Length: 100
Image 1 (cartoon, rainbow, N blue to C red):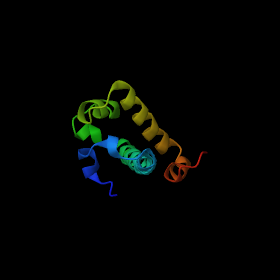
Image 2 (cartoon, rainbow, N blue to C red):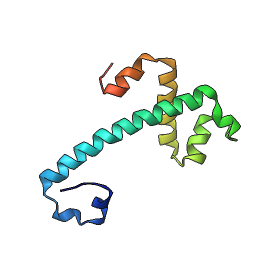
Image 3 (cartoon, rainbow, N blue to C red):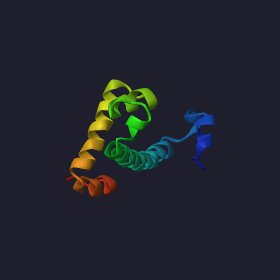
Image 4 (cartoon, helix red, strand yellow):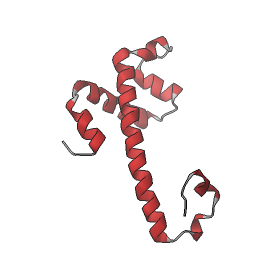
C-alpha cells in the first residue's frame, strides 16, 4: 500500500490500525527533519537580520505576519532559532534527535 499525497483523498477508516500507526511514525520522522531544517533557516535569517530588509521589524513580526504563526508558535520558533545561534553545539543534537 502506497502512502503518498494521495492518502488524504482516501477514506482513512479503511486503513488497518497497524498501518495507520506505522504511517504516523514515518510522518513524525519527516516532520522532525523538516522542523530542524526550518529552525536552521530561521536562525540564519535572524543572524543576517534579513527580515529587516523584507520590511519586518523583528523575527517575531516576520513569523507572525509573513508566515502566519500564532503568538505562541512564533515565540517558540524565534526562541529556538536564537538558541541555535547562541549555542551552536545543540545544532548537532537537533539533527540527530539526541538529547543534550
